[in-house]
Length: 281
Image 1 (tube, rainbow, N blue to C red):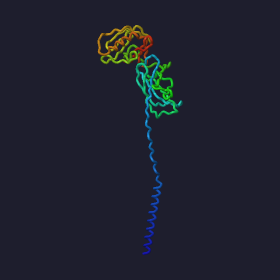
Image 2: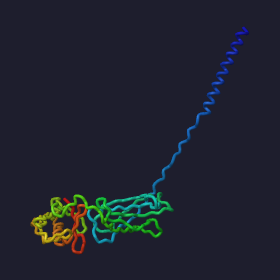
Image 3: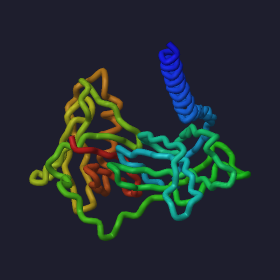
Image 4: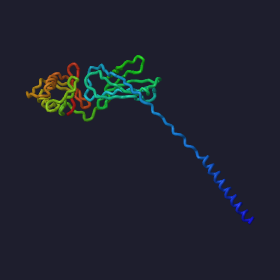
């Protein structure tokens, strides 16, 4: 009996020892589990949008060709050896004479006290740069006033520029009227656009003037000069297009010189002022 009781006590001791060892292991395992770092919440800074009014001008008396696009940008130009950083930019199609008002909306939180800034303006036609600002204009200078006046200068064409491929000639295509005296024209009667077409063989010009068809003689033409005679036209009356027709036909005898660039035909008078522009129809 004593022998059996001793075995039971020994067995019980073994079981208790095993349970205590397991508990220690569990405790160690619990202690060694690494804690996950708490998530860090970053609160985004709210934009502080402010307007910057800009007035773009140029002193060149020549009118801009059709399709001219003005781009104005506010740039951070602090780093001399790195590209500028654009804070705001606006683009717009322009026609007529300056000034051109533009409003740039920028985040004031991104303007740093120790940085340098500049407002730059460019004019492109078919992605070709024709005018650009050349003077630094810091909108945050102590003496800066709004609207900030930015002046454009004309870009001289490269002397070694290759001739444009597939450039149309004066004779042959129909040239659709785009502007008269710097003002964009609207379609005439029936929604049809006024146009002119030159015939080198017949030395003549004919077309649609807004209401009636017209015909004129080409009195002289060289690679850059062009003069037309008085136009003769049909005498139909129209509800629309009569005002356009009178202005267009009155312009024809004033033709003096011409140039074709980027598929745009520009006509100048004897004072070198652009009086009409056309594009291939």
